[in-house]
Amino acid sequence: MRLPAARIDLSSVNRNTSRALTQGAEIMALADAYEQDADRYERWKDQLCCACFYLRRGRLAGQAFTDRPCGVCGVSMTFPTTATDALCPECSKKLKLCKRCGADIELRKRRKLDVPKPAEVETGTVEETTVTMMLLPKKEDPCSGSSSDS
Ligand SMILES: [Zn+2]
Ligand SMILES: [Zn+2]
Image 1 (cartoon, protein in one colour):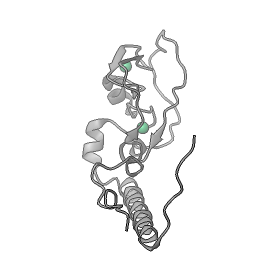
Image 2: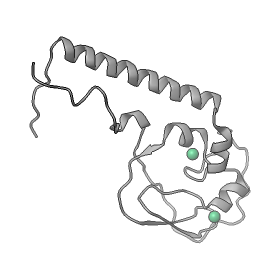
Image 3: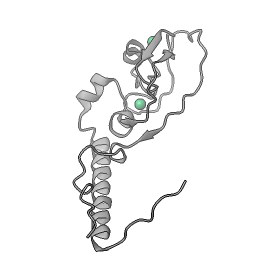
């Protein structure tokens, strides 16, 4: 692969500086929301831990319907993309676990876990690529598009 050289001039430096600052501020705001648990009611409704709710939203997902059994009861779940959940909503609720990643919903270390009986399903680890929201290309970027030659 071969890429063109970056254009470096005063306006590109200032544009890149603005972008870097904006991204830094967005990440700090996310970290803040994570720490404050600012939208906890929404998060509880979604049955997600703070990491999944605030930080792992931009999951990279393949466009393919994906089946995955619940890690507790084994019920088959179908997702429209490869971004799947570890638990079904019922087990997530009952055990107070994040339905997406399977962590404690409040990210507290557990001493024990009352999983009734392991489901008779094949288990394994699913590696997921996550990117924070602002790393995804924005729909509206006021900085780009005006890179006219001058
Ligand atoms: Zn289940
Ligand atoms: Zn989670």
